[in-house]
View 1 (cartoon, rainbow, N blue to C red):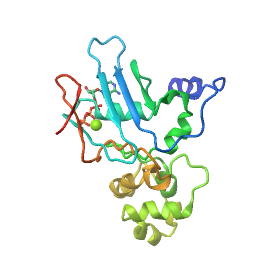
View 2 (cartoon, protein in one colour):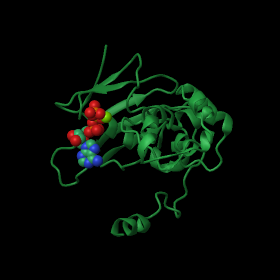
View 3 (cartoon, helix red, strand yellow):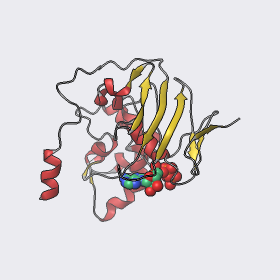
View 4 (cartoon, rainbow, N blue to C red):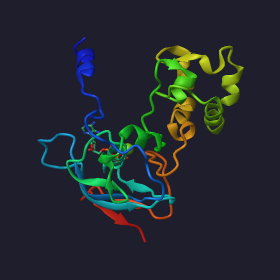
Length: 216
Ligand SMILES: Nc1ncnc2c1ncn2[C@@H]1O[C@H](COP(=O)(O)OP(=O)(O)OP(=O)(O)O)[C@@H](O)[C@H]1O
Ligand SMILES: [Mg+2]
C-alpha cells in the first residue's frame, strides 16, 4: 500500500505549468554535452562522467563499452528517465528538456536489454501505453519479430492475455523483441537501442574513465 501511495503521489512527469515544445523537429543531431550522472547523488563516483558526443541525424551510432560502463544509463538519460546531474542533451541547439517528453519518446524506438511482459493482452504488450493501437502497425511489429503467425493461430489472437503465469513464459523472448515501440510507433529520427545498436562510427565508453573514445 505504501508503494501504491508513493506512485500515486508522484508529480506528473511533465510540469503542466511549463510551456513545452510539442513539435519534434526532423534533421537535427542529438548533442550530448558534458553530460554527467550518478544514481546516488551522494556517491563520489559518477556513472557518467563528462560525456561529449554527437549522434548524427539519419546515421547509425553504436555505443559500445564494458559491462557497467554506462551504456544503458546513457540511453535512459536520452529517453528522459533521469535528469542529468551536469551538462545536458540537446536536439540541434535546443535542450531536450524544452520538449514534451511524451512527444520525444514517441520518436524513440527502444529495445531495452531487460524486457518486461505486462499483465495485458499481446497487443497491449507490443504497443504499451498506446491508446488506439493501429492494427497494421501492430501486425507489422509482430511480423518483424516473427510471431505474427503464432498469434493469429491463437483463439483470441492479439487479445490473448499474457503476463506473469505459466505458459505465458513461452512468449517472453518473442514478445519482448516485439514490445518495443520501434515497430509500432516507428521512430522517424533517433533510435535509442540499448542492446543491439550497431553502426559505422561507434563510440566506445571505457569503464576506466567513462569517457567516449571515437574508433578510427
Ligand atoms: N538503477 C540503478 N541504481 C543504481 N546503480 C545503477 C542502476 N542501474 C545501473 N547502475 C550502475 O550504473 C553503472 C552503469 O550501468 P549500466 O547498466 O548503464 O551499464 P551498461 O554499460 O549498460 O552495462 P551492460 O553492458 O552490462 O548492459 C553500473 O555500475 C551499474 O551497477
Ligand atoms: Mg546495458
